[in-house]
Length: 305
Length: 280
Image (cartoon, rainbow over all chains, first blue to last red; front, side, top):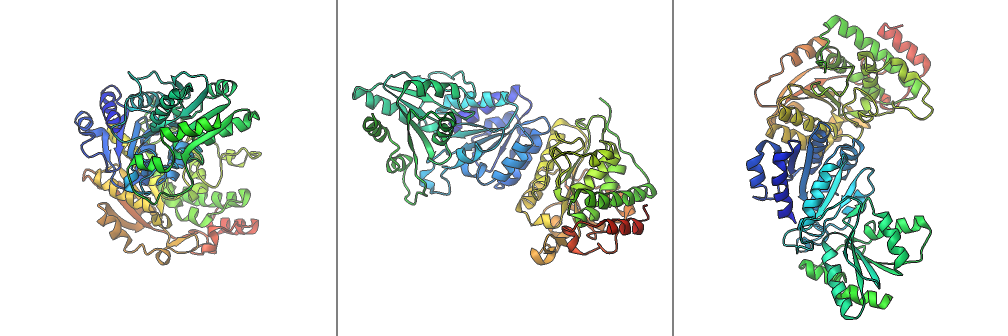
């Protein structure tokens, strides 16, 4: 996803003189081509994220479209107050990009995990929270974010994610994408685990269960009309995200359901527990421990039906 | 689009305006029950010098892209800035006294520019204004606009790590269209700034961070004028002015008394202060 991001930035920078890229001393060589094209619109802001976010806000208030890029915890939790005050309160059209969604950096330990970012960023007025599911959707999210007037958060995985779309999708912020039809049960996913949902659907198909997969790339704004349609049709909806159960997509949908006072549909959360992960391993191993694999989801949904 | 202009008022007029504004701030503190009087009074001369001599502004279009930018990074000085902006013509001073029924614009801190003309950035949480000002300075350079950016900091605010992140980044970017003025009144909310977090040697700190620096009397209009006039431009360095000031400056019973960080003056105290200032 991050290579797609860097490539898309490089493609967009010629046509959009407002585009400015700020990096927190990461992405060695990743932005070489961008820097060749627009050397004066790339700033390595150093390992100083609070300042970087304030600088981005100031640029955004003065006609530019800054894109802030570093590892997810450092571009979100580290400088949350700057995002809240400098970016969101000022309605500065900053695009905040975090690389390393969820457990992408499982091997780097909890300092580099990102299981709270969706929760805290979606509390901020005016902020859109986008979690692309594959490299093609990263490009679509970036393009859509540049058409917005306000601040946007884009949650990237790392590199090497499979392409789930065949071409760059037509993406409208706040409109979910149906990835696969199915009448028996629905799985709603966001970000880098939509691929896991698709795998689970394959597994369930072998058990004679037809699964619909909905890709909620926008956690905020939430596609409420799609949700209304889903709760009309399905008795069980599984919600999958590589994020804490607290405050993410499951929470957002639960809030929506609670506001409707219509609890007819059972919501199942596939997410991370409220704890730090003290054991180091690969992303796949971390997902297995968290029961965030296709096999676990398939099993849980069969029990629930 | 009109061209933003500086007023270039002489020292004698600036001193008169500073005196009036001090009186207005004190009266308004009593009226609106706004604290931070000491912090407001220590920066009045700096604000007056900037707004009535140097800053190129357009009061008919506060968003004119070629204007100079001023960021009150020490956002708790807002009551002083509100008076200065009114006097400079961004809105009638009477607006401050209109009953607002809880729907007001003039709180304890500057609101966002969308809510009040003349404001460049909403501050109040310390350590935010300078980074935002730095973004404005970069935007000016990218746009090839010759405007300058001033950020007014308090010494207490220099406790914040983000100030020093910004200081390093401004030097790395060789931003010579950016000027920091520190209202060095030697106090922060609950103690002497030097005792809370050792700032000294303060001027040398800024210097060693790659800034052109100087230390002046922040209440001498002449010093302020000649220092900003002599801005060492074209050297590829940002400029830091450490302005020695007195908290509560101008009123004998407020000067250097940190109780006036939060105290609201009574009507008698307002009258006494006005008498001392020679403003009736």
